[in-house]
Length: 254
Image (cartoon, rainbow, N blue to C red):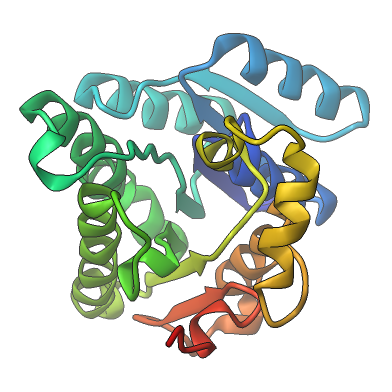
Protein backbone atom coordinates (compact mmCIF):
# COMPACT_ATOMS: atom_id res chain seq x y z
CA UNK A 1 0.00 0.00 0.00
CA UNK A 2 1.22 3.49 -0.83
CA UNK A 3 2.55 5.48 2.10
CA UNK A 4 1.16 8.74 0.74
CA UNK A 5 -0.31 10.64 3.69
CA UNK A 6 -4.01 10.86 4.40
CA UNK A 7 -5.60 14.06 5.73
CA UNK A 8 -9.04 14.15 7.36
CA UNK A 9 -10.51 17.66 6.96
CA UNK A 10 -13.73 18.62 8.75
CA UNK A 11 -15.91 21.19 7.03
CA UNK A 12 -13.91 20.22 3.96
CA UNK A 13 -16.48 20.85 1.24
CA UNK A 14 -16.56 24.65 1.22
CA UNK A 15 -14.55 27.79 1.91
CA UNK A 16 -11.34 27.36 3.85
CA UNK A 17 -11.95 23.63 4.23
CA UNK A 18 -12.23 23.16 0.48
CA UNK A 19 -9.02 25.13 0.00
CA UNK A 20 -7.27 22.83 2.49
CA UNK A 21 -8.50 19.67 0.74
CA UNK A 22 -7.35 21.07 -2.61
CA UNK A 23 -3.94 21.96 -1.16
CA UNK A 24 -3.35 18.40 0.04
CA UNK A 25 -4.52 17.07 -3.34
CA UNK A 26 -2.15 19.40 -5.20
CA UNK A 27 0.72 17.96 -3.17
CA UNK A 28 -0.22 14.43 -4.16
CA UNK A 29 -1.71 13.54 -0.79
CA UNK A 30 -5.01 11.78 -0.15
CA UNK A 31 -7.87 13.51 1.65
CA UNK A 32 -11.12 12.71 3.40
CA UNK A 33 -13.75 15.44 3.04
CA UNK A 34 -15.88 15.32 6.20
CA UNK A 35 -18.80 17.72 5.78
CA UNK A 36 -22.52 17.80 6.50
CA UNK A 37 -23.33 19.26 3.06
CA UNK A 38 -23.73 16.18 0.88
CA UNK A 39 -24.21 18.05 -2.39
CA UNK A 40 -21.06 20.13 -1.99
CA UNK A 41 -19.06 17.21 -0.65
CA UNK A 42 -19.97 14.87 -3.46
CA UNK A 43 -19.36 17.60 -6.07
CA UNK A 44 -15.87 18.30 -4.69
CA UNK A 45 -15.07 14.60 -4.53
CA UNK A 46 -16.15 14.12 -8.14
CA UNK A 47 -14.23 17.18 -9.33
CA UNK A 48 -10.97 16.17 -7.66
CA UNK A 49 -11.29 12.54 -8.69
CA UNK A 50 -11.77 13.68 -12.28
CA UNK A 51 -8.40 15.42 -11.97
CA UNK A 52 -6.81 12.18 -10.74
CA UNK A 53 -6.74 12.95 -7.01
CA UNK A 54 -7.50 10.31 -4.40
CA UNK A 55 -10.18 11.80 -2.15
CA UNK A 56 -13.28 10.50 -0.42
CA UNK A 57 -16.34 12.33 0.90
CA UNK A 58 -17.97 11.26 4.17
CA UNK A 59 -21.19 13.02 5.19
CA UNK A 60 -20.49 14.19 8.74
CA UNK A 61 -22.19 16.52 11.19
CA UNK A 62 -19.40 17.18 13.69
CA UNK A 63 -21.95 18.07 16.37
CA UNK A 64 -22.80 14.35 16.52
CA UNK A 65 -20.20 12.17 18.25
CA UNK A 66 -21.29 9.00 16.50
CA UNK A 67 -20.92 10.67 13.12
CA UNK A 68 -17.37 11.69 14.00
CA UNK A 69 -16.56 8.12 15.00
CA UNK A 70 -18.09 6.88 11.75
CA UNK A 71 -16.09 9.36 9.67
CA UNK A 72 -12.84 8.30 11.30
CA UNK A 73 -13.70 4.65 10.81
CA UNK A 74 -14.58 5.27 7.17
CA UNK A 75 -11.30 7.12 6.56
CA UNK A 76 -9.36 4.22 8.04
CA UNK A 77 -11.39 1.72 6.01
CA UNK A 78 -10.87 3.53 2.70
CA UNK A 79 -7.24 4.55 3.09
CA UNK A 80 -5.87 2.35 5.87
CA UNK A 81 -4.33 5.24 7.80
CA UNK A 82 -4.79 8.83 8.98
CA UNK A 83 -1.76 11.11 9.12
CA UNK A 84 -3.25 14.59 9.45
CA UNK A 85 -6.38 15.89 11.16
CA UNK A 86 -7.53 19.39 10.25
CA UNK A 87 -10.26 20.65 12.60
CA UNK A 88 -11.74 23.26 10.31
CA UNK A 89 -15.54 22.97 10.72
CA UNK A 90 -16.96 26.08 12.33
CA UNK A 91 -19.99 28.35 12.56
CA UNK A 92 -20.63 31.84 13.89
CA UNK A 93 -23.76 33.76 14.80
CA UNK A 94 -23.76 37.51 15.32
CA UNK A 95 -25.59 38.46 18.53
CA UNK A 96 -25.12 40.65 21.56
CA UNK A 97 -24.22 38.48 24.59
CA UNK A 98 -27.69 38.73 26.15
CA UNK A 99 -29.32 37.81 22.83
CA UNK A 100 -27.67 34.40 22.49
CA UNK A 101 -29.88 31.48 23.41
CA UNK A 102 -28.71 28.29 25.08
CA UNK A 103 -29.25 26.58 21.73
CA UNK A 104 -26.99 29.14 20.03
CA UNK A 105 -24.30 28.46 22.61
CA UNK A 106 -24.57 24.70 22.17
CA UNK A 107 -24.50 24.83 18.38
CA UNK A 108 -21.43 27.08 18.25
CA UNK A 109 -19.49 25.36 21.03
CA UNK A 110 -20.32 21.87 19.79
CA UNK A 111 -19.24 22.70 16.24
CA UNK A 112 -16.17 24.84 16.90
CA UNK A 113 -14.66 23.37 20.06
CA UNK A 114 -16.21 20.11 21.22
CA UNK A 115 -15.90 18.63 17.73
CA UNK A 116 -12.17 19.40 17.61
CA UNK A 117 -11.69 17.55 20.88
CA UNK A 118 -13.73 14.56 19.70
CA UNK A 119 -12.03 14.38 16.31
CA UNK A 120 -8.64 14.38 18.01
CA UNK A 121 -9.83 11.74 20.47
CA UNK A 122 -10.97 9.32 17.78
CA UNK A 123 -8.13 9.90 15.33
CA UNK A 124 -5.49 9.61 18.08
CA UNK A 125 -4.69 5.89 17.59
CA UNK A 126 -4.07 6.47 13.88
CA UNK A 127 -2.07 9.66 14.41
CA UNK A 128 0.06 7.92 17.02
CA UNK A 129 0.77 5.08 14.58
CA UNK A 130 1.81 7.52 11.84
CA UNK A 131 3.37 10.14 14.17
CA UNK A 132 1.08 12.58 12.47
CA UNK A 133 -0.17 16.11 12.96
CA UNK A 134 -3.27 18.02 14.05
CA UNK A 135 -4.00 21.53 12.78
CA UNK A 136 -6.86 23.42 14.45
CA UNK A 137 -8.41 26.36 12.63
CA UNK A 138 -8.84 29.10 15.22
CA UNK A 139 -9.23 32.80 14.37
CA UNK A 140 -7.90 36.28 15.01
CA UNK A 141 -11.07 36.56 17.10
CA UNK A 142 -9.14 34.56 19.73
CA UNK A 143 -6.98 37.69 20.23
CA UNK A 144 -9.15 40.72 19.37
CA UNK A 145 -12.79 41.10 18.48
CA UNK A 146 -15.40 42.81 16.41
CA UNK A 147 -18.78 43.43 18.07
CA UNK A 148 -21.49 40.81 18.54
CA UNK A 149 -19.37 37.67 18.30
CA UNK A 150 -18.61 36.71 21.91
CA UNK A 151 -19.53 33.01 21.78
CA UNK A 152 -17.60 32.39 18.56
CA UNK A 153 -14.62 34.26 20.06
CA UNK A 154 -14.80 32.11 23.19
CA UNK A 155 -14.61 28.92 21.13
CA UNK A 156 -11.68 30.18 19.10
CA UNK A 157 -9.81 31.17 22.25
CA UNK A 158 -10.61 27.74 23.62
CA UNK A 159 -9.09 26.15 20.51
CA UNK A 160 -5.78 27.88 21.23
CA UNK A 161 -5.74 26.48 24.77
CA UNK A 162 -6.71 23.04 23.44
CA UNK A 163 -3.89 23.26 20.90
CA UNK A 164 -1.26 24.03 23.54
CA UNK A 165 -2.48 21.37 25.96
CA UNK A 166 -2.76 18.65 23.33
CA UNK A 167 0.66 19.55 21.96
CA UNK A 168 2.11 18.92 25.40
CA UNK A 169 0.19 15.69 25.97
CA UNK A 170 0.90 14.23 22.53
CA UNK A 171 4.55 15.25 22.12
CA UNK A 172 5.84 11.93 23.47
CA UNK A 173 3.69 10.15 20.86
CA UNK A 174 5.30 12.09 18.04
CA UNK A 175 2.05 13.93 17.25
CA UNK A 176 2.42 17.64 16.59
CA UNK A 177 -0.54 19.95 17.31
CA UNK A 178 -0.70 23.50 15.98
CA UNK A 179 -3.31 26.08 15.05
CA UNK A 180 -3.87 28.59 12.27
CA UNK A 181 -5.66 31.85 13.02
CA UNK A 182 -7.21 33.39 9.89
CA UNK A 183 -8.27 36.99 9.64
CA UNK A 184 -10.75 38.32 7.08
CA UNK A 185 -11.11 35.53 4.50
CA UNK A 186 -13.60 35.56 1.62
CA UNK A 187 -15.84 32.64 2.54
CA UNK A 188 -19.48 32.10 3.42
CA UNK A 189 -18.79 33.37 6.95
CA UNK A 190 -18.32 36.84 5.49
CA UNK A 191 -21.80 36.89 3.95
CA UNK A 192 -23.62 38.24 7.06
CA UNK A 193 -21.32 41.26 6.89
CA UNK A 194 -22.12 41.84 3.22
CA UNK A 195 -25.85 41.06 2.99
CA UNK A 196 -27.01 44.65 3.62
CA UNK A 197 -24.57 46.23 1.16
CA UNK A 198 -25.86 47.34 -2.24
CA UNK A 199 -22.48 46.44 -3.75
CA UNK A 200 -20.91 43.48 -1.85
CA UNK A 201 -17.77 43.51 -4.00
CA UNK A 202 -17.16 47.15 -3.16
CA UNK A 203 -17.65 46.28 0.51
CA UNK A 204 -15.02 43.53 0.25
CA UNK A 205 -12.59 45.99 -1.35
CA UNK A 206 -13.26 48.46 1.46
CA UNK A 207 -12.52 45.80 4.08
CA UNK A 208 -9.33 44.99 2.18
CA UNK A 209 -8.18 48.62 2.31
CA UNK A 210 -8.25 48.43 6.12
CA UNK A 211 -5.89 45.44 6.10
CA UNK A 212 -2.15 46.28 5.94
CA UNK A 213 -1.50 43.95 2.97
CA UNK A 214 -4.37 45.66 1.17
CA UNK A 215 -6.75 42.80 0.46
CA UNK A 216 -9.16 40.29 1.97
CA UNK A 217 -7.64 36.83 2.19
CA UNK A 218 -8.54 33.81 0.08
CA UNK A 219 -9.04 30.24 1.33
CA UNK A 220 -5.77 29.24 -0.32
CA UNK A 221 -3.88 31.72 1.90
CA UNK A 222 -4.99 29.69 4.91
CA UNK A 223 -4.60 26.34 3.17
CA UNK A 224 -0.92 27.00 2.45
CA UNK A 225 -0.30 27.69 6.14
CA UNK A 226 -2.12 24.51 7.13
CA UNK A 227 -0.13 22.50 4.62
CA UNK A 228 3.13 23.87 6.03
CA UNK A 229 2.25 23.08 9.65
CA UNK A 230 1.18 19.56 8.69
CA UNK A 231 4.26 18.95 6.56
CA UNK A 232 7.73 17.62 7.46
CA UNK A 233 9.01 21.19 6.99
CA UNK A 234 7.38 21.98 10.36
CA UNK A 235 8.82 18.92 12.11
CA UNK A 236 10.08 20.98 15.09
CA UNK A 237 6.93 23.09 15.52
CA UNK A 238 4.22 22.14 17.99
CA UNK A 239 1.91 24.10 20.26
CA UNK A 240 2.19 27.11 17.95
CA UNK A 241 -0.45 29.48 16.59
CA UNK A 242 0.22 30.89 13.13
CA UNK A 243 -1.68 34.11 12.38
CA UNK A 244 -2.74 34.46 8.74
CA UNK A 245 -4.45 37.84 8.60
CA UNK A 246 -2.61 40.14 6.20
CA UNK A 247 -1.29 42.11 9.19
CA UNK A 248 -4.74 42.86 10.62
CA UNK A 249 -3.73 42.37 14.26
CA UNK A 250 -0.70 44.65 13.93
CA UNK A 251 -2.85 47.79 13.64
CA UNK A 252 -4.23 49.74 16.59
CA UNK A 253 -7.65 51.33 16.14
CA UNK A 254 -7.68 54.59 18.09
